[in-house]
Amino acid sequence: MAPTLYRGSRPGAEGRARDWAEIQERMLVPLYETVYDRLEVGTGTRLLGLGCGSGLALLLAAARGAAVTGCEADGQRLALARRRFQPQPQWGRRVRPAAGTHLVPGLPGVAEYDAYDVVTAFDPGEPVAELRPALAAVAVGAPRGTAVVLAGWGPPERCSASRVLRVAERLAEPRGPASFGYGMRLSGRDDLVDLARDAGLRPDGSGRVSCPFGYPDLDSAVRGLLSTGLFDAAVDATDQQQVDKEISEALHPFRRADGSVRMENVFRYVVARV
Image (tube, rainbow, N blue to C red):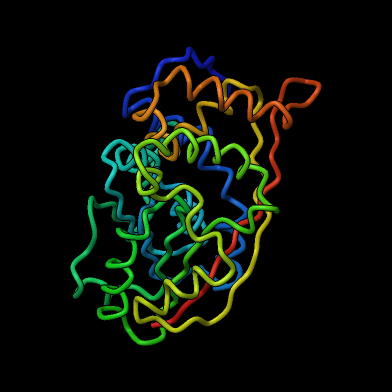
């Protein structure tokens, strides 16, 4: 992908969704693959992705043979996910999309969770207040033994990105602690386990995965980080130019001689069972 220069103006919903799909979402691929290996996701797996974003994690599961369903509240991200699963022409003919692929807005009803044996909540930016009721519905509606995977940031001292995300927390502070909402949520050692238990799930293992954030240049890094939504409250409390400037300054220690940006991060995940 050729990098596109960031012009300093806040992109619209479609542009941000595309930045997420083209720049930021791939940073979590090591997390997706590690979880799929651990749960032996493959042919016969019925997988539901909560907050599936633009569908990259689902695409990786489908490539292993799983029947996948994705739920996403962001209409722009969902549209990109649907585009990813459209059949592509090969050698002059159209290829059928993967069987059993479904992409839907919102969340399933409680009774619909009975159709899955793996449920994932990979997005570390998903607000706890929105995720908890969805997990509680899974606990009630999914079959006994269904695996539910929760992911979050690792220890701040192991996440270089935490230094940059503190910009969002500091700039959003005038609107109160709740304005930052879900910045570095689920970064405590037991937060993911506590969330699973609160939802009525039984923790059944955990792990950590290295997920470096790498960008070809500073502009791509700023766009990728903005696409997460974690800086929205900071923009609302100050202005876009101020947020752009402070993100760029916070990224300075992670710039390399060739102009690229790299931050080493560790993410946690917990496997729980219904």
